Amino acid sequence: MAVPMIDQLRELIVQAGGNVQTVRELEPDQAVAHNALDSFGFTAFIAAIEERFAIRVSDKSSVKLRSLNDFAQYVEAQHARPADAGTRAASSVAAEASGLTLDGAQLHYEVTGSGPPLLLLNGIGLDLSAWGPLAQALSDERQLVLLETRGSGLSGPPPEPCTTARLAADALALLDHLSLGPVDVLGFSLGGLVAQELALLAPNRIRSLVLAATAARLPGRTRRVIDAWRRLLLAGVDAEAFRREQFAWVFGAATLESDTLIEGALSTFADVPAPSARGFAAQADACLAHDTRELASRIAAPALVLAGEDDVLLPTAAAETLAGLLPRGRFERHPGGHAFLSESTRAVAASVLRFLDEQRKNESATGE
Image (cartoon, rainbow, N blue to C red; front, side, top):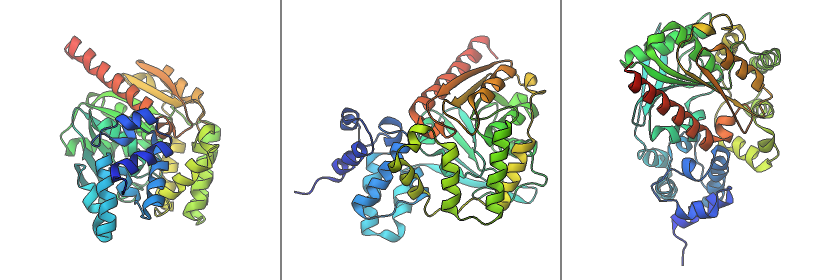
């Protein structure tokens, strides 16, 4: 007798590192990433699906697929109608994808989830798919507004010159376009630099900040590594070689010890081209020039600064210094490297939501 599809998927979740009891209790309509696996377990799960069912799960589809039901429909659709399987499976996740034209350039964004708005600003060279399971976990309680930084993904070319202040102006233009504010903001790496500038540019539009893997001024080692990445892309390095170089810097020691996790991550990105050399170089310029050390004291919004315990790209001391410069800053460490949002997804999501809920309660209590 054939094993039901849902049961086969449960087996693969356990194979990817999920707890047996947790997986057994997982309802078919619950999010796999939020309830059973962190991001790298989720990556291994995707790789296991591809191997078991001899199909390819595109990077775009892997972001939109949430539950056991979603994955079961996707696998069955791939076998029945390979040409449009990704579109059919992704339809179970409601998301508005659109664009805004600013200074002649397209700003790509997506809106998904329900609840108070949370603006997500991505890291250098990353498109929206990088938010993956973390976005899934947050979207159950927040309306996510995901902005793709100019120079990445489907957004247009970067502004000239490209600075974090200019990129913050893009984010403000999107808030105006959507008539949003005040909003909470979560910025990762470059996105955290931009979030600081946004809070300085439009303080009345920002309720709170979550600043992940970022700093007021990037340390020397971080600047040298980003400059080296820029030079590699401008020299035409191929996508896999570039990602192998990045992985050594962005993942924590535990992840790097696992060949399965690293190869699974590479497999997930197999069909994704390397970042645009021009776009990455411009974003790198913005990172290297950023310095809010003398301005951070003007940021009035409450801020949660998060860092990876094992971040060798941007040491935790730099993030902790930023928290100390912010009048209402607090600091937290989480297991993992620079990519700790992916390595500790569930813990990070819980911490972020707890912080955001606390700010809303404080706001209600004070009548602000």
